[in-house]
Image (tube, rainbow, N blue to C red; front, side, top):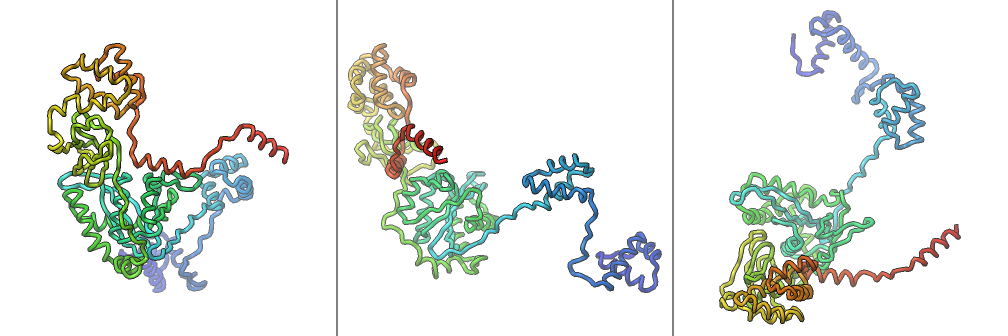
Length: 509
């Protein structure tokens, strides 16, 4: 038997052989097919020749269904109950004598009540310098030195030219976000008038009645650059398609078939990739290289950068520990011993840590250690004297300032702990990080009643009688104050006014 490559070749052989005189029986035997199949093939082509052939194919004739006799009832139920389910419709029809299965009921219901089609997304082009889009994407990278780690790709893309800036970070904190923005602004030499963001908490705190509530700290930052954030509604990634799609290019071109030593090696490769690949490739939508389109049409339309950049340092309060270190992001930085137990301001930049005394004079400056390392950075000039390190005199004035019960307690402490008085005084002062000075003063009075002249005793008393507090960030305090000024004053109404409104409404009815 001959082997045919397609159904069309088989049908052609049957038709031509029948024309040459082969009978239907002989053809069925020759091709090992039933006579009914041979007959249907011959009739099909006879019909094409006599009645015409359509490129759309033969129209299927619907078969009679058990549900056909019940269609008036089906239409009645669907019209009366538009949200009726297939199961409920099947139950109603079964009660009326329907003998079929539920599958045909569900299929017919879907035909009668088709699901609404999704509204097509209409892509629109923005004017030069008008809009940018920003987003993050996490990637798991197996570094040669550090092993497998999750890094975040920051992407900021100009809507008109499609020129893109990317960078890789270990975290997505607020300060990392605004610093990467500043790098992107410097890369482009300007800022667009708007930028689209999704529901990230560093930018949008929440949505209320369909309106985004922006992070006041981010608003303060973006206002410095005269740009405006635009929040994209949740679950609508298509509105930021210009920044979502390029992540595929990052994955397939930058990260694909490359090995990186560590994060810095990845960032270095990212900078090379932007200049030699991303800026130069022909964009699918614009048909031009992004850099060429940027220089020719968009660069001049950007908002110029301010003379002084926004201060993106994080400022927090820390109590100097008894060993002469302040802690920030699990790392420790030394300060002069005379500041032990003082509340100090720590200004954390991306590469530098600066520590300021109670009078906001600079007392220490260190190169920043990578967050989470648990390491110490110590300046030998901060360790001039062992007496200063452990003695009472450098902290005596600060201890007496705790309150009226501090002098008698210190006198008792000197009698009870003559050799370790300075150590215990420092331990008590260090508790200012978690407790208010007034609570510590009350704890000193309580301890004197039981002759408990010991730092551990004060710690136990505070744990039992006082509430802990945390030292807030300067930035959070400032943002809170600005927000309170911006909010309208709310006057509490009496319940009688509401009662009058309800009575008036009922009367009008």
